[in-house]
Image 1 (cartoon, one colour):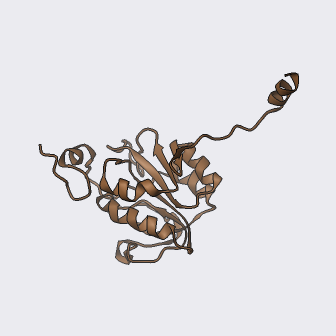
Image 2 (tube, helix red, strand yellow):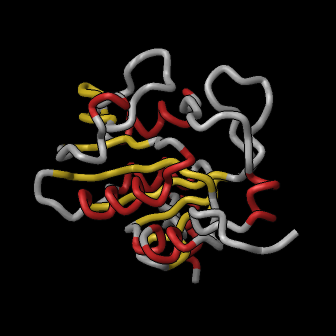
Image 3 (cartoon, rainbow, N blue to C red):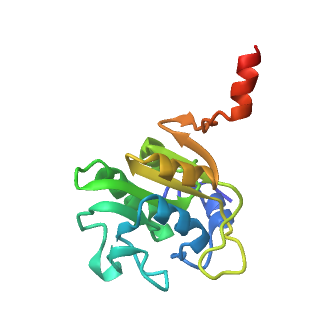
Length: 192
Protein backbone atom coordinates (compact mmCIF):
# COMPACT_ATOMS: atom_id res chain seq x y z
CA UNK A 1 0.00 0.00 0.00
CA UNK A 2 1.37 3.43 -0.89
CA UNK A 3 1.79 6.17 1.65
CA UNK A 4 -0.05 8.72 -0.50
CA UNK A 5 -1.86 11.59 1.20
CA UNK A 6 -5.60 10.89 1.60
CA UNK A 7 -6.51 14.59 1.52
CA UNK A 8 -6.68 15.32 5.23
CA UNK A 9 -2.99 14.90 5.94
CA UNK A 10 -3.28 11.18 6.62
CA UNK A 11 -1.85 8.48 4.41
CA UNK A 12 -3.84 5.60 2.94
CA UNK A 13 -2.14 3.38 5.53
CA UNK A 14 -3.36 5.64 8.34
CA UNK A 15 -6.87 5.73 6.87
CA UNK A 16 -7.12 1.95 7.19
CA UNK A 17 -6.23 2.09 10.88
CA UNK A 18 -8.29 5.14 11.77
CA UNK A 19 -11.31 4.79 9.54
CA UNK A 20 -14.78 4.03 10.77
CA UNK A 21 -18.25 3.90 9.31
CA UNK A 22 -19.28 7.14 11.00
CA UNK A 23 -18.27 10.74 10.39
CA UNK A 24 -19.99 12.13 13.49
CA UNK A 25 -19.36 10.81 16.98
CA UNK A 26 -21.73 11.82 19.80
CA UNK A 27 -19.78 13.28 22.72
CA UNK A 28 -19.52 10.86 25.65
CA UNK A 29 -21.46 12.34 28.61
CA UNK A 30 -18.72 11.23 31.03
CA UNK A 31 -16.25 13.42 29.12
CA UNK A 32 -18.58 16.36 28.66
CA UNK A 33 -20.00 16.75 32.19
CA UNK A 34 -16.76 17.78 33.95
CA UNK A 35 -15.90 20.18 31.13
CA UNK A 36 -19.39 21.68 31.18
CA UNK A 37 -19.05 22.16 34.96
CA UNK A 38 -15.58 23.70 34.56
CA UNK A 39 -16.90 26.41 32.19
CA UNK A 40 -20.32 26.87 33.88
CA UNK A 41 -22.02 25.69 30.70
CA UNK A 42 -21.15 26.06 27.03
CA UNK A 43 -22.56 29.00 25.09
CA UNK A 44 -22.20 27.52 21.60
CA UNK A 45 -21.85 24.19 19.81
CA UNK A 46 -21.09 25.14 16.19
CA UNK A 47 -21.27 21.59 14.83
CA UNK A 48 -24.22 20.10 16.65
CA UNK A 49 -26.04 17.07 15.37
CA UNK A 50 -24.63 13.80 16.66
CA UNK A 51 -25.90 14.26 20.23
CA UNK A 52 -29.44 13.44 21.30
CA UNK A 53 -29.78 16.71 23.22
CA UNK A 54 -28.10 20.10 23.00
CA UNK A 55 -24.73 20.55 24.65
CA UNK A 56 -24.77 24.35 24.54
CA UNK A 57 -27.21 27.22 24.94
CA UNK A 58 -26.97 27.84 21.18
CA UNK A 59 -26.27 25.30 18.46
CA UNK A 60 -25.44 25.37 14.78
CA UNK A 61 -26.41 22.33 12.76
CA UNK A 62 -24.98 21.24 9.42
CA UNK A 63 -27.63 23.40 7.73
CA UNK A 64 -26.38 26.47 9.67
CA UNK A 65 -22.76 25.82 8.58
CA UNK A 66 -20.83 26.55 11.75
CA UNK A 67 -17.66 27.10 9.72
CA UNK A 68 -19.26 30.14 8.08
CA UNK A 69 -20.64 31.62 11.33
CA UNK A 70 -19.00 33.83 13.97
CA UNK A 71 -18.58 32.07 17.30
CA UNK A 72 -19.03 33.57 20.76
CA UNK A 73 -18.54 32.88 24.45
CA UNK A 74 -17.39 29.44 25.55
CA UNK A 75 -17.54 27.00 22.64
CA UNK A 76 -17.74 23.19 22.53
CA UNK A 77 -16.71 21.65 19.20
CA UNK A 78 -16.86 17.93 18.35
CA UNK A 79 -16.57 18.26 14.56
CA UNK A 80 -17.29 15.78 11.78
CA UNK A 81 -14.08 13.79 11.64
CA UNK A 82 -13.92 13.87 7.84
CA UNK A 83 -13.30 17.62 8.00
CA UNK A 84 -11.13 18.06 11.09
CA UNK A 85 -8.58 20.36 9.42
CA UNK A 86 -11.14 23.07 8.58
CA UNK A 87 -12.71 22.91 12.04
CA UNK A 88 -9.36 23.11 13.84
CA UNK A 89 -8.32 26.07 11.71
CA UNK A 90 -11.63 27.77 12.52
CA UNK A 91 -11.28 26.97 16.25
CA UNK A 92 -7.80 28.49 16.34
CA UNK A 93 -9.03 31.62 14.54
CA UNK A 94 -12.16 32.02 16.68
CA UNK A 95 -10.26 31.33 19.92
CA UNK A 96 -8.19 34.45 19.24
CA UNK A 97 -11.24 36.71 18.82
CA UNK A 98 -12.41 38.94 21.69
CA UNK A 99 -15.98 37.63 21.40
CA UNK A 100 -14.76 34.12 22.24
CA UNK A 101 -13.56 33.20 25.73
CA UNK A 102 -12.54 29.65 24.99
CA UNK A 103 -12.97 26.93 22.37
CA UNK A 104 -12.66 23.30 23.47
CA UNK A 105 -12.37 20.80 20.63
CA UNK A 106 -12.59 16.99 20.72
CA UNK A 107 -10.78 15.34 17.81
CA UNK A 108 -8.84 12.19 16.97
CA UNK A 109 -5.27 12.31 18.30
CA UNK A 110 -3.58 12.30 14.91
CA UNK A 111 -0.28 13.99 15.67
CA UNK A 112 1.27 12.99 12.35
CA UNK A 113 -1.22 15.00 10.30
CA UNK A 114 -0.66 18.36 8.66
CA UNK A 115 -3.60 19.90 10.53
CA UNK A 116 -2.10 18.93 13.90
CA UNK A 117 1.21 20.61 13.14
CA UNK A 118 -0.32 23.64 11.44
CA UNK A 119 -3.17 24.37 13.88
CA UNK A 120 -3.62 22.00 16.82
CA UNK A 121 -0.04 22.32 18.03
CA UNK A 122 -0.81 25.99 18.72
CA UNK A 123 -3.59 25.26 21.21
CA UNK A 124 -3.20 26.83 24.66
CA UNK A 125 -3.78 23.38 26.18
CA UNK A 126 -3.81 19.85 24.79
CA UNK A 127 -5.06 16.72 26.56
CA UNK A 128 -4.14 13.35 25.11
CA UNK A 129 -7.03 11.28 26.46
CA UNK A 130 -6.03 8.06 28.19
CA UNK A 131 -7.58 4.99 26.55
CA UNK A 132 -10.21 5.02 23.84
CA UNK A 133 -13.52 6.83 24.18
CA UNK A 134 -16.90 5.18 23.81
CA UNK A 135 -18.91 7.76 21.89
CA UNK A 136 -22.58 8.43 22.59
CA UNK A 137 -24.35 5.31 23.74
CA UNK A 138 -21.85 3.03 22.01
CA UNK A 139 -20.83 -0.14 23.79
CA UNK A 140 -17.53 -0.31 21.92
CA UNK A 141 -14.55 2.00 22.02
CA UNK A 142 -13.60 4.18 19.09
CA UNK A 143 -11.00 2.72 16.71
CA UNK A 144 -8.71 5.71 17.37
CA UNK A 145 -7.24 7.70 20.27
CA UNK A 146 -8.69 11.13 21.03
CA UNK A 147 -7.50 14.49 22.31
CA UNK A 148 -8.97 17.70 23.64
CA UNK A 149 -7.67 21.08 22.48
CA UNK A 150 -8.29 24.44 24.13
CA UNK A 151 -7.95 27.64 22.10
CA UNK A 152 -8.18 30.91 24.00
CA UNK A 153 -7.48 31.12 27.72
CA UNK A 154 -8.41 27.94 29.60
CA UNK A 155 -9.13 28.39 33.30
CA UNK A 156 -7.55 26.30 36.04
CA UNK A 157 -10.85 24.40 36.27
CA UNK A 158 -10.63 23.46 32.58
CA UNK A 159 -7.00 22.37 32.93
CA UNK A 160 -7.95 20.26 35.97
CA UNK A 161 -10.80 18.66 33.99
CA UNK A 162 -8.33 17.91 31.19
CA UNK A 163 -5.86 16.48 33.72
CA UNK A 164 -8.50 14.05 34.99
CA UNK A 165 -8.69 12.56 31.47
CA UNK A 166 -5.07 12.19 30.39
CA UNK A 167 -1.69 13.78 29.73
CA UNK A 168 -1.97 17.57 29.52
CA UNK A 169 0.33 20.13 27.93
CA UNK A 170 -0.20 23.84 28.61
CA UNK A 171 1.59 26.30 26.33
CA UNK A 172 3.79 23.44 25.14
CA UNK A 173 4.89 22.29 28.60
CA UNK A 174 3.77 19.11 30.39
CA UNK A 175 1.25 20.09 33.07
CA UNK A 176 2.10 19.11 36.63
CA UNK A 177 -0.57 20.09 39.13
CA UNK A 178 0.75 21.70 42.27
CA UNK A 179 0.11 19.76 45.42
CA UNK A 180 -1.39 21.72 48.27
CA UNK A 181 0.60 21.46 51.49
CA UNK A 182 -1.00 19.52 54.32
CA UNK A 183 -0.71 20.03 58.07
CA UNK A 184 1.62 17.02 58.11
CA UNK A 185 3.90 18.75 55.60
CA UNK A 186 3.99 21.86 57.78
CA UNK A 187 4.85 19.79 60.88
CA UNK A 188 7.65 18.04 58.97
CA UNK A 189 9.01 21.42 57.87
CA UNK A 190 8.98 22.69 61.49
CA UNK A 191 11.03 19.68 62.64
CA UNK A 192 13.83 20.39 60.17
